[in-house]
Image (cartoon, rainbow, N blue to C red; front, side, top):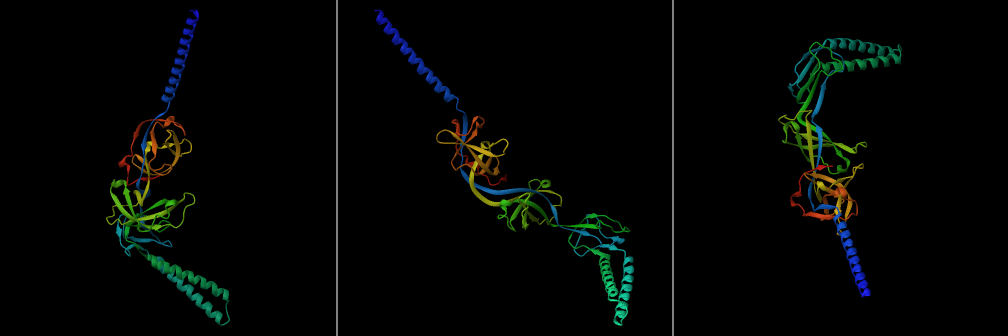
Length: 356
């Protein structure tokens, strides 16, 4: 009887031990499952994205001309004022002609001395050095007189508007120009385009211009000049864009935003919530969920910003499942629990964006 009781107790103890061990194992497995990071994901697809690049610039006059004299002279009349519109060839400044008469007397005297020196040399008197010196003085006197004659009445070389006046009648001209004239039909903006787009820009291609003062109103221009060299410091080249400005609403000095469209490209688009910025390096990453339930930490290259999404130039394949929330607990190769999976948003496609 005692042996039977002992056997029963041993059996019960074994069953209890086995049951406890099984329970502990199940609890551990359940705990492990509960510790998986919880994430939300989205399926992403390739789509056509307009390759629109945006730049900022300041409007400039198409041409700027300074009305000035090569030699000091007294101003007799200024026929226009700041804000006056002028036509090409229009008289704008009249200078005193007193200096012209003095220069003419000097020119005549120098010419007579030169002729006498040449005559003396021909009959054996004087020297060639003296003749050469007088010839140099005569040429200089002729140039000075000619410049003074041309500068007595100053005319506008362009159709434009007077934007600066630095003297009044009776003043002597100095280093500053008498007037500054600017051509406003057309005007231009100059933008710095990244080197990678050098082969995409063409003379004549259209550009959209927006001016802060006019809100969302669009002004249309075209590329008029592409500078042929790349700045080695900035890796950019300069592009000039001409705006017709027939109504002269666009004025030099206005702040402008310029858009160039380089066509479209078929690339993967992901929600902006999927982008992870690596501290210190500035590199961008996306967590991509694999078939094994683990995530990979993929470095990506951003293209256009599309409202609440980004175009990716590399790093994520078409049809991939990317993590959009819960990235803080993740690392490369970590298994995750997906609590919400969103299909591709067909409305995510966008037609315009910003180059990064």
